[in-house]
Length: 348
Ligand SMILES: Nc1ncnc2c1ncn2[C@@H]1O[C@H](COP(=O)(O)OP(=O)(O)OP(=O)(O)O)[C@@H](O)[C@H]1O
Ligand SMILES: [Mg+2]
Image (cartoon, rainbow, N blue to C red; front, side, top):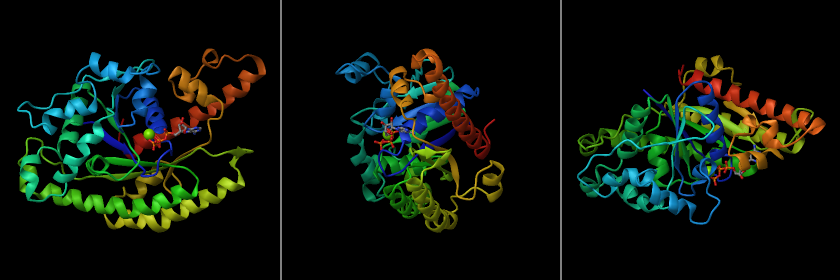
């Protein structure tokens, strides 16, 4: 059965989408079947996969491909239509066999209010009982159709009802962050929010009205995979002093605040699991330095930085050999990240 991984941090701009795309690509290049889900109304992940440079390109895509996006696929549940949810016809990601996308929708945020009301678990729940279990049901039937090993979900920044639902009903969550003061603060807030969301999910799972829904609320089973620290400058192979300071502060927040909170609420895997996957004691899955000039080529070619070729970069001679070394090093980093994720999640 496919494993669902959410990429979550309420802080914006910390490489959630970039990590989703790169991790998904790397897992697929190792022969695994991966469905990425764009659950962010900003639709940045969708923009990384589809050619959307023309104005109205997304509208045009929705018109030509009805039902091929997260919002429309969930409509039978959200509009109480008497038809069951159907697996999504995912978009195969160009250039990477085994990798698929459920595109996002800019109007997904319109569903947030009804989901929020349903998730208050009050008397008004009866009419909205199919909403809380609908996302995980949709992912399950779509993953079954594609025989997927992983469903990787890119979330918006923020603490809305959709993120609450997707994180609390996923198998694993991974927290991208940057070495800066805002990410340190965000780790502290995750230490409060994740336990609160899991309490809620455990209560929701016990409610008869949700158990009897067409899409029953699943048994919560979330576990924390770790953090990916991204976008810092290196000198002689190490983060510069200015960044190192924030690495230290992040480590402190993870160990002193996040991990104890996750341990109390049973959101950690066993210590052996983290150790066997080769992680250090700070739950860091990967450290990814700034992509520098490679980011532009990656965006142009809609490929991860580690999959860029000499042709993509359009460089000769010494310039290429510098870039090639940098691409190889990013490939090693993302390969290690993928291996750790596979090991932690018992993927094969
Ligand atoms: N390692 C990196 N080096 C350089 N640029 C990066 C790196 N990772 C991400 N970026 C760039 O930083 C910006 C923000 O990244 P991304 O969109 O992945 O963050 P996000 O957390 O998904 O943001 P949001 O919260 O808005 O969804 C993007 O322009 C992306 O190309
Ligand atoms: Mg994003």
